[in-house]
Image (cartoon, rainbow, N blue to C red; front, side, top):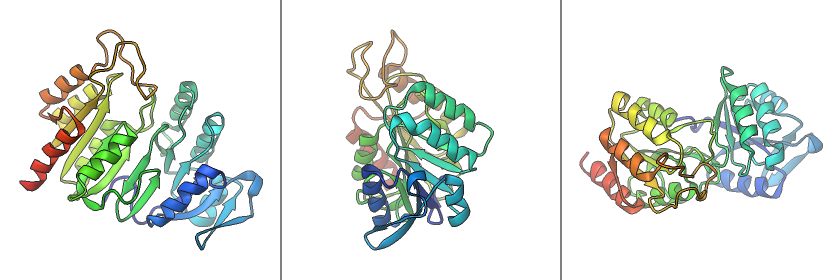
Length: 293
């Protein structure tokens, strides 16, 4: 099994005909992802050939879903058009919308996230690398060759640390790796993924990667203490970040005593999570757990 994404997932790409969308459509297909269509109103009715695979282009997400049975959309459109693209997917009843776009205005993210509430649409991102269930499907920009299938679940705010952790634990493999994004407002949280991994019978242990800013990791620690029985190891990026300076992600900023890496580490350890001082140390902690099973 896996969470959110499996071998039966059918994917449409909003923005497929753009340079970035086409590049990653090619890579997703190469990883075995069932990309069944693209969406571009100006090119509706056309088709593109991607390394020998003919992919139809539809005028809307609703048309793509009706024609293909798609249940996942991945969004590769510029920030100014992202809100409209996500709302279109929500209106079409798309179960999972993965928003890769970086630089989406926080106001727009807040509006399309609130719009999704109660609709049955799960949003991952924005400003995220997507998610990958190795050997089954890969939606977004996670390199497909860094790790294979296994029994570790990974949830991370950071794209690059997602890649590093997958590579360092490649001998064990992953059920699913989810990059949730580092913006102040995101559609799927650490807690959402922790709950899904806890419920997944083919996930044995969980790696959680956070970073400075906000209180998501503290809330996740409280959730782990009450609801997660599987072993969890963690890493919090940003121990040396200066106060008041945004570091990498729009949400990674420390204000006064709020959102520091030290406070997050303390909360996680109080919940029984082993926290590494570096990504490699975190991987070593998980390696010990997996070798003992």
